[in-house]
Each structure stands twice: as C-alpha cells, then as structure tokens.
Image 1 (cartoon, rainbow, N blue to C red):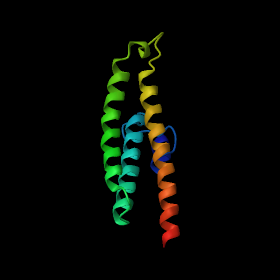
Image 2: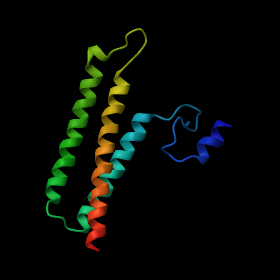
Image 3: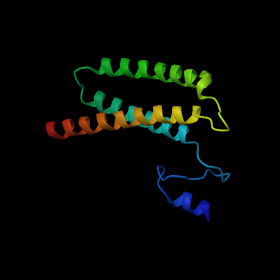
Image 4: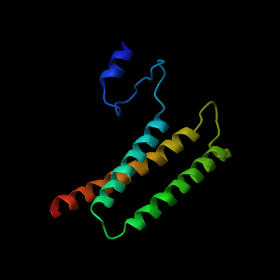
Length: 119
C-alpha cells in the first residue's frame, strides 16, 4: 500500500518511502532540490546575459564551500550529539538546506518576473 502511495505522489510529498520501504532521506532530497534550483538559475542567468553572471558563479562556489564547512561543523559539534537518544545533527543540516532552498526559490521568482517583464 505504501509503495503505491509513494509511486503516485509528487517528490516533495512528505513521508515518502524508497524502493526498499524505508523513509526517503530528507537531507539528500533537499540537497538534490537545491542543486536543481541552482542549475535552473545558472541557466536562466546565462541565457539572458545578466549584468553579473560572475557574481552568481562566485556565489555558488562560496556556498558549496560553506555547505561543506557547515556539514562538517554540525557533524563534529558535541553539543548537538544525542541527548537521551535525540540527535540534532540531522535536523540542523536539514534546516540549513531548507533555508538555502527557500532563498533560491525567492531568487528564482524574482528572476522569472524580471524575464517576463523584458519579453
């Protein structure tokens, strides 16, 4: 039953299961979504030859380095370690990616609006 639900729901539907019947990895889903939105923005900026594509490329590079640093910090942060069987490291990493995704979605909305007004 769960398999049928997962197969027929959108990828952002909550509590989906993978092919083995385990919950999908929220961190991996978010990381994939962030990459997809970054690529979409990169493509749109490149197509329309915006004023500062180099700034966007630098931003991407710096963000990816920051993401690696943040994940490493969270993984090593003793104060996030399990307390009475609750591990906050995963939640912290997910929260970080959710923020990035929301920021990118906002950029994409404004980029799309600007593109629509120039056409």
